[in-house]
Length: 202
Ligand code: IMP
Image (cartoon, rainbow, N blue to C red; front, side):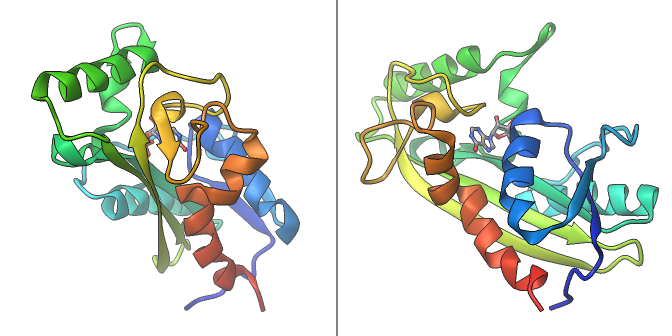
């Protein structure tokens, strides 16, 4: 595995929630980070149908544009009774003409599960794939997951995206109700990051 020896790193994401969480996870490693949005880069189209494929598109685009190593995150929620949808299309399910509307997307998911009379509890999994790409075209990939169930009504104002309807296994709170540090300790992003640490250490 190639080690990330460079001190400066681009975060290849325009998603505020992810940027905050990734910057927080990287803090102890003394890397100086700048986001692709701050550098004025556009978001490349995510044309692949896997988390790995889309994570690669974003990281390689930012690495080539900046000349620096870039870290991307492609993530989403898979709901078992919906055939693992929305999966890589998690952000798309929230899209409206006025921007992203996650309460609408969460209600849609709940209504679909109810209409299907799906087997309870409604099992779900958050998936996060992190990709580090270098300007020379090399990359390293790390996948993390966290299992849980979909609950209704939405609970909690912390976090972002689908956090208010995701209750991780063994816990009574949703990700939306958890203290951010608690979510960071057990999330799909933390799981992927724990695998990525090997790439950061000497
Ligand atoms: P993408 O990786 O930019 O395609 O977007 C992933 C989408 O998945 C986000 O916009 C969120 O809707 C959802 N998602 C990913 N990670 C989380 C999380 O930690 N909490 C809640 N929603 C998430």
